Amino acid sequence: MTAATTPADAIAGPAHPVLRLEAVRKSFEGTVVLRDVDLEVAPHTVTALIGSSGSGKSTLLRCAGLLEEIDDGAILLDGTEITDPRADQDAVRRRIGVVFQAYNLFPHMTVLQNITLAPRRVHAVPRAEAEERACALLERLGLADRAGEYPDRLSGGQQQRVAIARALAVRPRLLLLDEITAALDPELVGEVLDVVRGLKDEGMTMVLATHEMGFARDVADQVCFLDGGVVVERGTPARVLGEPGHERTRRFLSRLV
Ligand code: ADP
Ligand code: MG
Image (tube, rainbow, N blue to C red; front, side, top):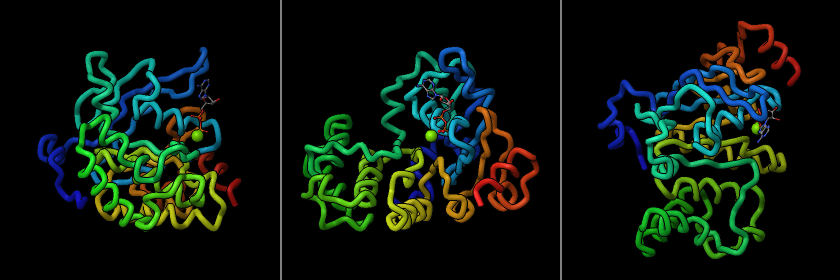
C-alpha cells in the first residue's frame, strides 16, 4: 500500500485536501461542542488534535467519520461534500477508517475473521482474497502468527494493532484514530505508535487525537490545539508545541509536564 499517488489523488488532483471542515458546528442538548471549526488535511499528512479532556477532539473525529451529524457547516472528502444530505453516507463511511481508544474487536471472532468481516460483507471481496489481504496486513503489523487467535488471548497492544489492521482492510482513504494508546499499559504504547509511524511512511492520511505530545511532535505534520470546541491554534509541531502563540495553549502544555 505505497500511496505516493493513489487513484483518488489522480481524480481529485493534488490541490484538494483529503479532508476539509468548513465552519463545522456541533452541539449536544444545547451545549456547543464544536464552534466554527475549520480544518484542512492534505494528502499523505498526519494531523494531531490536542487539547484537554472535553475540548471536542472525539466529537471532531466522529463528525469527520460521519458517526455524528453536524448542526452547521460542511465536511468535504476529496473535495466532495459528504455532509450534504444527498451524499451516500454509507459509501463515504466505507472510505474512512476509524479506530477508537477501546479496541472494540468482536470477541467471538478470530483475528482473521475480525479483519475480513467488512471487506467480505460490505465490499463483497471474495473470501480467499480478503484472507490473503488480511494476512498481508497482519504480517506488516507484526501479527502474522496471531490470525487464528481470539482477541482475549492477545495483549492490549496486539488487540489495538488488530483494530488498526481491521480499519485498513477496506483500504480507506483516510484514517481517524481517537486516542488509540490511552487504554494501554505504558510498555505497550510504543508498538502501537510504531505502527502509526509506519503508516505515515507509507503515505496514509491520518487525523489523530492524542495525549502523547512527544509522538505528536515526532509524527504530525500539523498540530491543532482545541479548547472549548474552538481550534485555538494550529501549525507545525515545532511551532504549536515549541512556541505556542496563545496563552491557552501555553497553559495546556505547561500542565502536562
Ligand atoms: P475530548 O475527546 O476532547 O475529550 P469530546 O469530543 O469527547 O472531547 O467531548 C466534548 C464535549 O462534548 C464534552 O463536554 C462532552 O461531555 C460532550 N459530549 C460528547 N459526546 C456527547 C454526547 N453524545 N452527548 C452529550 N454530550 C456529549
Ligand atoms: Mg476523546
